[in-house]
Amino acid sequence: MDLSSLDIFLAVADEQSVTRASSRLGRVPSNVTTRVKQLEQELGAALFSREGKRMRLTQEGEVFLTYANRLIALADEARGALKPSGPAGSFRVGTMESTAASRLPPVLAKFHAAWPAVSLKLITGGTKGLIRQLLAHELDCALIGQPSVEGIDTGYDVGRLEGERVFTEDLLIVLPPRHPPIAEAADLRVDSLAALEPGCTYRAVAEHWARGARRLRVQELASYHAMLAAVSTGNAIGVMPRSVLDLLPGGSEVQTHPLGRIETLLVRRRGEASPAFEAFRRAFVEG
DNA sequence: TAGGAGCCGTGCACCGGGAT
DNA sequence: ATCCCGGTGCACGGCTCCTA
Image 1 (cartoon, chains in turn blue, purple, green):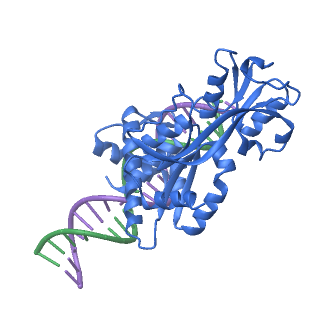
Image 2 (cartoon, protein in one colour; image 1 turned 60 degrees about the vertical axis):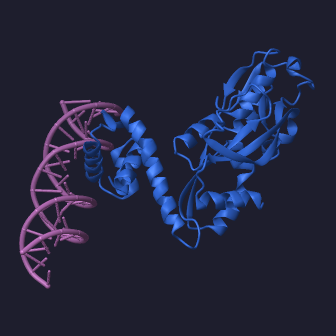
Image 3 (cartoon, helix red, strand yellow; image 1 turned 135 degrees about the vertical axis):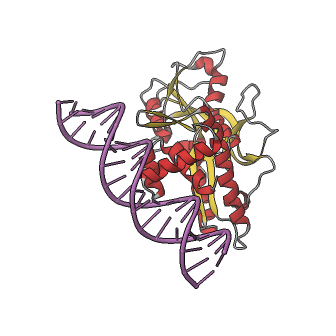
């Protein structure tokens, strides 16, 4: 088992296609097929199930994926550690959509300028999904939302992860332009909540806030632009940080109700700090 | 240093599945 | 039924490493 075999395995797992993986890797498909088969023979397990033309990871493949990600990341880290000039290699950062839009641009610009040798990959998602990916070694660190209210489980496991606060967000319920002002959830005139995926911390906080007073039907949307558009029609409320609302065109036309403060944490697996992570962390701390 | 063995990548042909 | 696309197998050539 060598690193190139792992690269090939990861590319096929990611693309679910030999042809797309081969094109991404700059190899011919037959070579990719051969290398995958060799790896399967060496491991004594079928990593993929061939379903027609689709290459799907088997259960063994899913298990091996975690290890392959760890091995590749460790190799990158080892190469980076030997470079006196600073961190290098790939660095995978998971982030909430809102953080990526409103907070990260200046941090990323600073990081890229300081460490051009680091190939940074940004993956967006909800807090729960990001934590799962971090624990599965599919990410090197993640920016997650951590509410202060009790009773909301984000999946943040302090035994296996460690993190520090990098931002504080003012979370808002976003109300349609002509909705009367509210003091609590019972004052709502609509029963639809436009929100992102189920693992989104902000969505969980909004649902927790409305619990008991109103049963909100969730309209699941893919972006904050779509959320604001849904709110503007008058049929739904939304939930987003003030920093995001301020960036959206039309954001000043809706009404808001404060939902409290949410910490954004920069988290990593406990005890694992690569040179690239330290450099990334400094980009936040030193502003 | 030269020759052989083994490994790896490429090119081509073939097969099967899906779309039209 | 036909065509197209994607996965696979095989032959071949190039490269590297080992040994005499």
